[in-house]
Length: 78
Image (cartoon, rainbow, N blue to C red):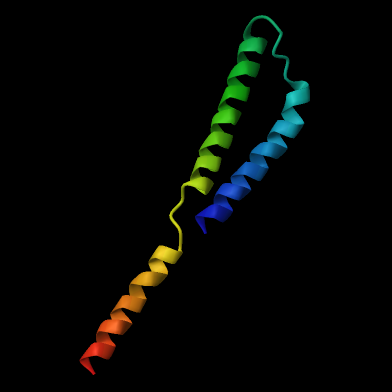
């Protein structure tokens, strides 16, 4: 279920970038340029964090192996 949340966050971040990048002026001086750079840096951190969450999440196959072990033990006692 977590992978779905990460994917949704990636899609929302991509949509915000699609809308915001044409309106941001990175080359502007003063507060406008600083805001643009900070906003883009935070957006890249969001993308990196969500990709890390997707790529390094634990696999479900490990969880499925544990119940099989208990079935084998119960068969040994019967």
